[in-house]
Structures are given as structure tokens and as C-alpha cells.
Length: 241
Image 1 (cartoon, rainbow, N blue to C red):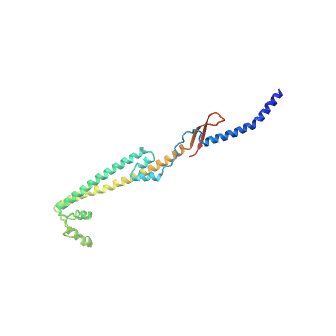
Image 2: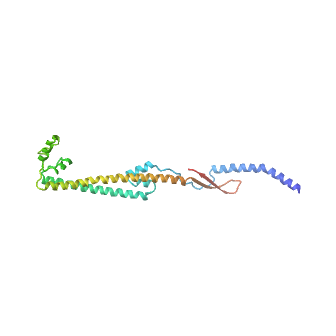
């Protein structure tokens, strides 16, 4: 019985160097197979590329909603695009109506006040609604020493009769109100861009944060083809981008 144990011990002791050698050989073969591409790895996730916050802001300033589209979240951006269309529609409509009002009181001044509208600026059409005629206006400027503001009695002539000045003033006021309201629409257009840019920057920051977290763990798998071993599965865990 003791002889059997001695024989087993000697066989085990003799096999240890060979086993160690086989393990080292196996390690080299696995490395060579991986390097040479013999393992069939699963396709890696798409390489992560951060989106540019400043680019998203620029898109939203050019056209509200495009920054959100760039960030990959147009569900909120579409409302800024719709608002942009509404504001531009309002601006065009109000501007056309304002111009119509302007043409209206210009025509009234020409037909009822004897005004030659050619070459006259907005200040002139404002003044003729305040004074009954050119003489009243020039007298007022003369008394105040504003001689440079006096009008030429022939080229800049006007004279209202009856209630024509009041009618003209009402028409002029309506036209100016519509023109001034355009400022509010322009302000809305600017504000829409600012809010869209802020929202786009927020969405890009959230996208970069979430995508970076999702790609933090990377797992790949493959099948080894080592000659001295049966086929097996290789799993590779990697943390980081």
C-alpha cells in the first residue's frame, strides 16, 4: 500500500513542471488568438461623441427648435418652431396693416389738407396732425427760436378745414399704434430664441451625461479557438469610455 502512495507522489511531482509549462503555453496561445482576431467578438457599442452645447445654442438662435433637434429631443423643440412661425405670421400681418394705415392717412392729407406727400418724413406727418396749418407751425417755431425747424411755405404747405385735422389725427394714431406693436412681436421673436437656446443647452448637457453613463460599462464576448483546448467563450468586461 505504501508503495502505491509513493508511486502516485512521484507521478504527481513529475507532472507539475509539465502542467505549469502547459498553462504558460495555453496563455500564450490565447493571447495570440485574440491578437490575430480569431475570437468572434460581439460588435462594440457605437463610440460615444459628445454634442456641442454652443452649436445647439447657435442652431436655436438661427431657428428655434433646431437646437433641440440637434440634442435629439424635438418633442419640446417643436413648440418653439411653431411659435416662431406664429410670431412671423403676426409680424407680417401687422406690418402690412400698419403700412395700409400709413397709406390711408397719407392719402387723406393729400386730398383734404393740400399736402404734397413726396419726400416727407415721419416727423412732418406727425406735425401736420398737431397744427392747423403751416403758418401756425412756423409761428410757434419762430417764437421758440427754432428757425431751423421751420418749413418752406410752398413745398411743405398744408391747411386743415373743419374737423379734417381731427380725422387725420385719429387715422395717424391708429397707424402708429400698429407700427409700435411690431416691437412687441420682435421682442417675442428674440425671447423665443433665448428660451429655445437655453432649453437646447440643457438637453445637450443631459444627453452628454446620460450617454456617458450608459457607455460606462462595456461587455464583449467571443469564442476562443485555442488548439490545445476545446472551443470556449471569452467574456471581457471594461469600464470607462
